Image (tube, rainbow, N blue to C red; front, side):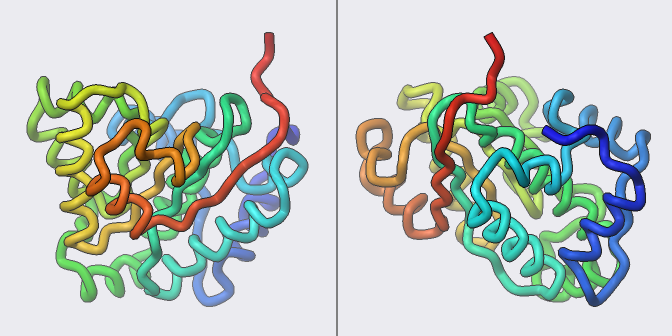
Length: 226
């Protein structure tokens, strides 16, 4: 990945996403808050879109830019499902998209536009990152936090096919049906392509995911060391 981007490079990158209004990058305090309050993975929180230019194919970058631009102009997004084998940066890309989304939604003009369209858009609950294990853990241990994640305007769920058990499947189904009903943008990652979800999930949940998601396949060698 690239060396650490300068503030001017990050601003220029954000301007590519939006030519209509100013979107400001995050301060270190903002990023710390995302890690603490919104469960962002620490090791990916510094990444921006240019960091991936030489890592994933151009069509993946363009899909993400289009998805983020829809947030800027107030167009409802399909869910996006990042599919690929271990180590091709699915989690990093999902984290990065969620961070951009947070930057976009902090703009008062954009947030007010979305709040007119969807009363669930709340200033305190714009984004949340969940690993698939967080879904069950928070459902059992912290119902308020679970409800906050389920209702976040933009939610990312990482590695959706793990764990594979009936209780997780039931809770995931509950979360995703709520998000479909309320037209809430959702980012999913999976090692399994959409056509293979039936090996893990019952047909109604497969149909729910596939019917709402734009699948983006990420290929290449693992970027994990070791």
